Image (cartoon, rainbow, N blue to C red; front, side):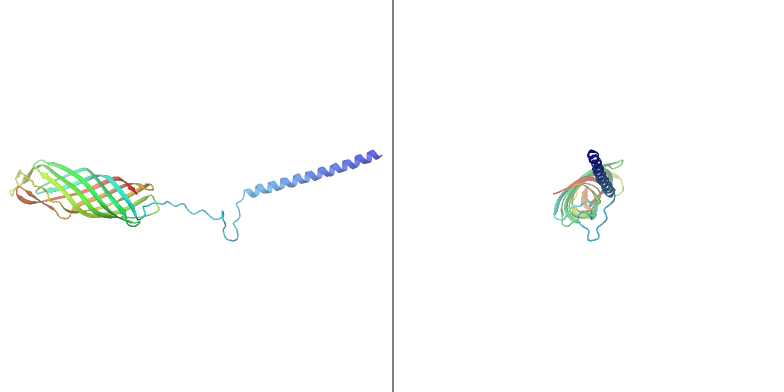
Length: 248
């Protein structure tokens, strides 16, 4: 009797312990499932001020352009279409024209610069023979940079300078229009001007590629003696240029 009673009590106790353990395991599994479900949902925004980690990230910005107070060097090679007149002879040719400038950004949008350009051209006429023209620009100019948030910055500029000139012709025309040999003296250097416009492509913090157009012309014409007579010499060029630019 006593042994049977003890066994019955033991069985009841074991059943209760197993029941409690099953209940604990079930509750734990329910908590895990609820946590996983919450992990899939977006966090609700705070009702008060947005705190750290809750606010949206600022939009990405591209920092381009060269700030004021910066020195720079711009070098390029142009393909120039040159036209000129030496007295009654004229010519035209397309040639390479190297050029460059040293500039200082006075403000974020404006630079002042010293520029140089050189070209030499030659043409042949069936009646007057060879004609030649040379031009070297030494000028003071300015550029306006249209700053924006892109890596491409447009600019416009121009300047006035002193142009070193040279030229010649095998023949000229006399008063009757006949071709005669020409004794051409030296051209007088004269003031001139240039206009430019283009785009600078931002590659690194201080390095750019650029493409632009330039137009060079004399302010008036130069004087030259041909066969002892006073004649005029005029030259102009329109150039398409590719180059590089450094700031430092």
